[in-house]
Image (tube, rainbow, N blue to C red):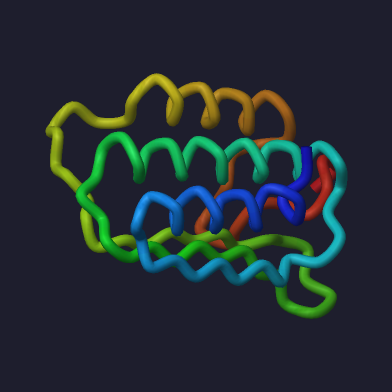
Length: 116
């Protein structure tokens, strides 16, 4: 599974659901383990937008500065619903997977490689 392969699919699914969607992927080549986790995050995020929001617009980004060692990912949409229940099962699973595989994302972004 790769982020580059999942991005067009995410755009297609969200657009088919009637959302104005922009996907900007400029993260470059990623370590396969990081790529798989970020692709999984993208899939879960699409699921969350479709199931738990009333969004009409969605922007998804993944970028890394040239020569940078981290990847910053971002989501924005205009339909966030406040359920008051905190992170759901999918979000908890992804956090645990990220911590187990290579450490959780930090304010500086995701590591480009599993070795950090």
